[in-house]
Image 1 (cartoon, rainbow, N blue to C red):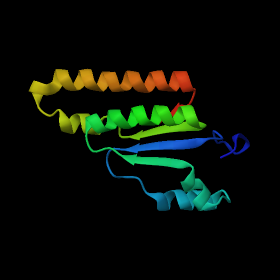
Image 2 (cartoon, rainbow, N blue to C red):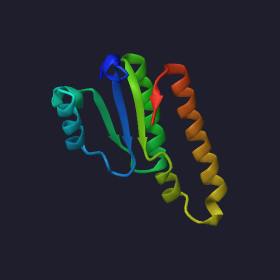
Image 3 (spheres, rainbow, N blue to C red):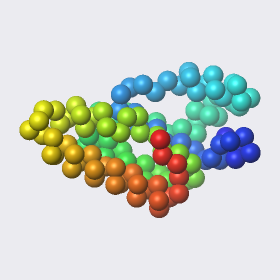
Image 4 (spheres, rainbow, N blue to C red):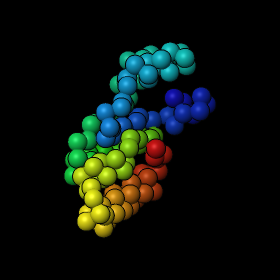
Amino acid sequence: LPIDMGGGEGKAIYIDTEGSFRPERLLAIAERYGLSGQDVLDNIAYARAYNTDHQIQLLYMATAMMCESRYAVLIVDSATSLFRTDYSGRGELAARQMQLAKFMRMLLRITDEVRLNMI
């Protein structure tokens, strides 16, 4: 959306860790704002992450994309779910916390450097 309509005037990157992305929901929102649904979908880079390593790899790829084009928002839904799945049990708690902290630091660094919103 343009800034005067409350948007960030840029594209979006959506990293989906739970399989909850629903394009039909975005089409309904686009219609409400009088926008072309296809244009809205064309401005969203979507990727499904299947494990924590893949999630981190997708974040690196997203960073490269942000250098090539204007992105206003990065959505990671959910940033923590794969870490809970991949590192289950008390014995892996320390490793999970370390990897999750590393991922969160990467997110913060990207948002600071690229100046975009993160959800």
